[in-house]
Length: 216
Ligand code: AMP
Image (cartoon, rainbow, N blue to C red; front, side, top):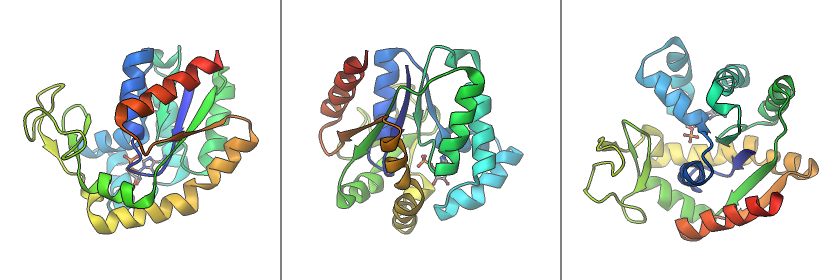
């Protein structure tokens, strides 16, 4: 099973991808996490990505496609993947198509997760991430058991620099301009399913799993 999760920042793609990873036993591959890993290790790729990420802009397509392709080439992806935050432009979707055809893979489904903009802003401003394992939390909607500490690995939680208000607005604009066109792209390809993300975390997961069950 090869799945793409599409949707604006803050809609819960990462949270849902983690839950699907547990349910389906498929790796969750988030382009944003791959960039943050490179940033943390101060690699040349991380240094290149930083200037875009800090401004809430997209990293250039060629760099992003090459990074994701390298990750998809790892043995754990052979049985399937859950892609989160990639593709984000039509050029990336075309790049992904090329990679899949090189690997002899088919994309099974693209879930477009939706929520109203006020909800996205409120979710992003309260979001906290584990510095160690990247598990996402929300100070009100999904708090950890102990404040500031990851339930999964005990790591320290932090607020992403790009979750601060000015950058959030910029990211939502970038989404509308560069990523929303992918909705039509995948609808035309007959791969799109819309999921209402303006519900509780467990309800959204159930909708996703039901839709995946219906694909078989
Ligand atoms: P995310 O964690 O998905 O919200 O991504 C954080 C930031 O990483 C984005 O604002 C972009 O700067 C960069 N990024 C993540 N995924 C992509 C992508 N597919 N294409 C370009 N830039 C990306």
